[in-house]
Length: 280
Image (tube, rainbow, N blue to C red; front, side, top):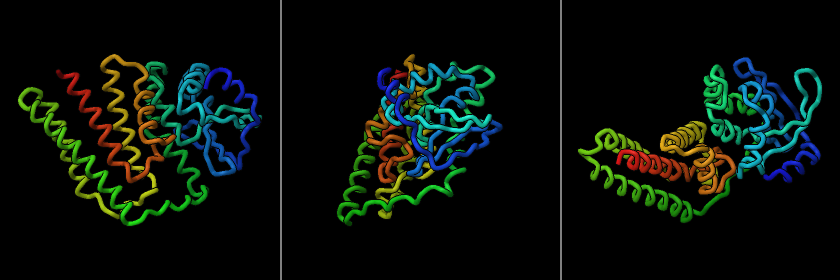
């Protein structure tokens, strides 16, 4: 979204909402609006105030982001003082993407711990406050038995190929990069365990669980930090951008459950390659 598009959005009629609530997050009253279709939106300005961030640069960062920019909406909300204001809002499921793009150095020193708390818990707390009132999810699309078997077989084949490649890298590095080799062996063992528990009753069309979403976010964080250690900038934005383009989702929590293992393997492989390059 460029400046012209941002101006056009500001001039557009505010999105109609069904209800609004204020959710307490460790003492910070965060307003959340629910649109008529059930989607949840969070205004950016209160969050930047709570985190000690300048709102202008954050709005411009969102406007430049290929994933966040198309999703923002202007929504009329009621503030703590009872006055109504039209605020720039992000869909709740994209809130972690914005939070992980905030450089800790941009926040005040006494706020950095709060930023970590927002990253780790904010989505879950806000979503739980509304989950009982959200519309029922649409039933997942059905696949024939053959199509389902093909999906699973393809995923297993992809994982097996990744394992072979990684095992070869570990063998080459044995005795040279002990710590890294141990890490890679441990990861291969964990992934093999996931393969052993992969079952045909996977709900094709269903999205990843809360626990799986946390694991995906942790893997993205590891890759972003490894890139940052090599001197790159905007690493979280880069990794999330690649993730969204690769799996064609607008939020990582919308990742199909059937592609969870594939996505986690890709992120771990990327992280392992960065470790190898750093150690060599």
